[in-house]
Image (cartoon, rainbow, N blue to C red; front, side):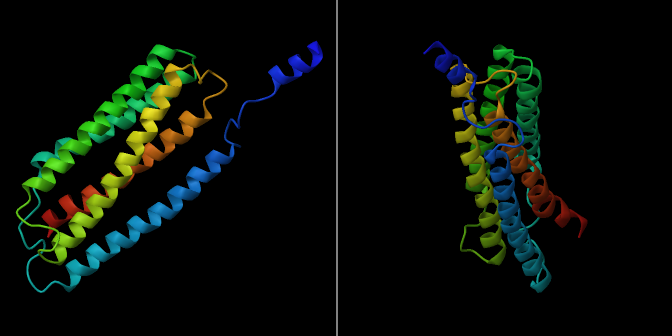
Length: 200
């Protein structure tokens, strides 16, 4: 009986490390989602090339909200990276909770500012080709941000319950990979939609 209990305690609870099924699963998800974003951006550039008038037709997109919002999203990635490296891998729960909480807060601020930017636009989804592709690309990204916020909230809860330690934090690493992907995609979207039109 005692031997069976010791054996049960030594067995792993769920997968861990880079060999976990979740690790490979998130990279497959990222590959498919990256392909969708590439298709959407291809559509954007195709519509721009086929446009007979100026592009974007409503003038250059404002950087007033989008610029600071980009910095906010990048800071959320830095906070999550810090939570994983300085908190989980060292077994410091306070740093882990603070880092995930900061990433969650900054990601939420990004989503609110993105929504506000949509409301400030002078065009709507059905106004023209540019409006349709703009709202589709940024909306698809915002959907990924909202999913990521759900993941971050769950990771924070698990961290608060003590599910992570120095050896066992695969879920945090997997969630962080997804969040960093969402941030990297925004950099590409921001460059394509906000910066490249300024280069003519």
